[in-house]
Length: 434
Length: 187
Image 1: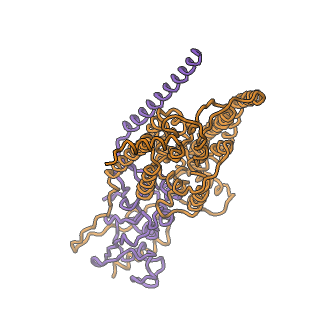
Image 2 (image 1 turned 60 degrees about the vertical axis):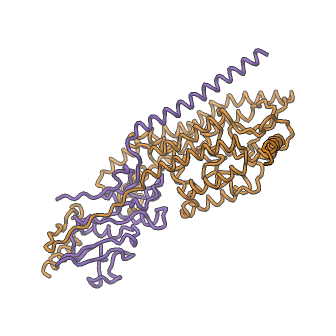
Image 3 (image 1 turned 90 degrees about the vertical axis):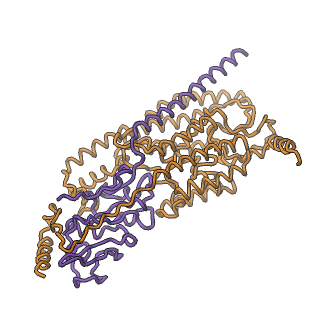
């Protein structure tokens, strides 16, 4: 009883003197028990066995091989669709969409810029494998493996055509997203691809309200506009597009030769089928030449302008970094521009660091963002100019072909080709009837 | 005609060269990252010395029931009768009545050990990681209670949603072979 009273006094004393909080260790010395009481262990369950990650990687590799086989050899949309469903269930709902190659861009970037971070081998493999497969077989990853693509693929019911200029313009968003993701990952501020992943909330069957609204609207748009995230937002798609241009074997609509029957013209829900071109009418040719010259001159102007704009944006960009946010909050409080404190400034003061130290760190980060912002802006200027140039150049094409970069290798166009039906019939005849 | 063929060849040469360069680049990048990596994975963990018990862990986790839970370093605990982690600041009575308990879910169990010591254990299934008890323990006690990411529950998101919301930047990526940042006991 006496001891208890003593403890209570200590408690009251502690209440009265919060300055004691600094020496919080062992206010009450751990007791020496006389009853033979044994201290229980602190429970620390181990993380998920890394063997599962190797299983995931193996399934990923197998899915990519199977996708490439089905798309190039089997040429059957039904078989591809079965793999689509499997990928959606396994990589989406079972693995809950993490880690995916799209997000792995940031892990790779962080490894390059932050020496204290080591990329998990699975993330490195997830990042590299689809790119390697794309170099050989085109975007088979987009066609049947990527869970984000698959969830949009299954809701696509009534595709509408998006004009080429609009598609090109909207695609700038994806480049901006990629550039921003790399910038924020490189500065260690945020993984925005993961933070704003629109479909991961569906895969986890829980998520925050804003992202659910974003994801649902993308899916609703996706009923009419085929795979909007893949075409207009996906940062990994930007990389895959460039690699797909170089691919050894890409999807071909016809298994043999194009007869230019125009039957496949409207087959692609993603607007990725390119028609045979005719020669320019002479009048148009001259205008087009002038336009191209203008855009070529515009290229360095846009790059410089973008870099300048990006440099100007360093303050809002830097605010993505938690340290800069903390510094700004503490500064506002200390200069009396804001009354009271919040969790962020309280947490900073609890560390006992000097605010000058924090300001210095924040201004160093702002300088990095000034450079990063300029690079990002310059990159975007380059992309916009590149798109303008690409739109004013006409490639000579004699057949109906899938676009070398934009084809998502879904296999929907195969059955539109009369030559494909011919091939299937021949195959059927070759099989003896018993 | 020969000229046309030449152009095609040049274009083809460039294409093949670029293709090879891309492949080599990817191979090199993988090789480098695998060579640099000596750990198999990184997982999220809370630095208990930075945590300010703001309560975000209970609400921001992508799991409905947070992966963050309170752990107890028993060796640090004072086994007080008047435990400020167990009881609200001004309890109506020093007993186990719900109105006196700090924990909103009643996850802390109090067991008598010997006079005047009481043992406090956390019922894992009830704890929601709000950190109210941790705050109480840090304020007036030894700080033996603190929050940790439980790796049997954590999905190991590429970017932890609680880490984004954490005001004190207490969330860190730690190697998976040492997945906990336990408070060390100094004797």
